[in-house]
Amino acid sequence: MFSIGDFARLGRVSVRMLRHYDAIGLLVPAKVDQASGYRFYTAAQLGRLNRVIALKDLGFTLQQVRMIIDGQVDGGELRGMLRLRRAELADRMAADTARLAGVEARLRMIEREGQMSTEDVVLRAVPAVRVAELTAVAASYQGADIGPVIQPLYPEVLRRIEAAGVSPTGPSVAYYEPVAGSGEAVTVHAAVPVGVTTTTGYDFDVRDLPAIPTAATIVHRGSMDEADRSMQMLARWIEENGYRMVGFAREVCLEFDPDRPDRWVHELQLAVSRD
Image 1 (cartoon, rainbow, N blue to C red):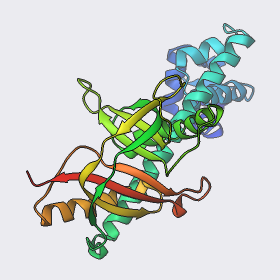
Image 2 (cartoon, rainbow, N blue to C red):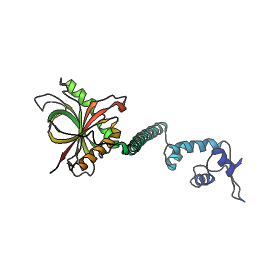
Image 3 (cartoon, rainbow, N blue to C red):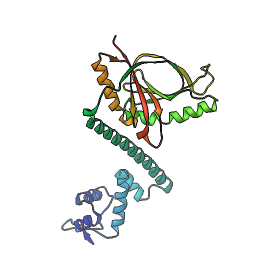
């Protein structure tokens, strides 16, 4: 048998953790010396300890771990629990990856601040356009919230307009509107210009985007995760030239490679006014 200290080292856990597992009946010592109170464990108990740690690392509570190990959960239930936990971990990894990409984009933007110029900002009128579109709601205007919502919309709206015998007449457009009474939530519009004469009878919406009489525009090259640097240039230009912004920017996709975000080209169009 092994003392609690030796067993802890073999199992690569703390003595405090073993005492806690004993207290809740999850891993009881093979023997307790009645005179000294010392706990002793057998090598065979390392198997149970390893299962406890593995299930705990998967995110199960100690109560769930005990039920699983003691056979109170059948095979079907255990598979369901593991599948659910796998999905939760995958979602967390995706969210962490998106946050990491956002942090890296912010760092690159900060590093380039001294090199940023407003010379590429162009003030012009944007004509009205009829679009076919699908919409969804994102929790906020942040890139981490927008990306997962808008990305599935474009292939779906393109599939639907093709099935309807409609052809795009220009580059796709993304635009946004606040959701009334919902804090930071925004309605995300994935739109494609079309030349249809009727606006009904389709399994997608047809809408006329109004003209923008005065728009501050800039061409953004690269992933939209890094669009903040271009928005910052627009902000500087607007401030330096005495304008104010009106609403959210439209994003017109000029070049798109699904496998190479660094090759994307978008024009950002922001309505501005001096009123």
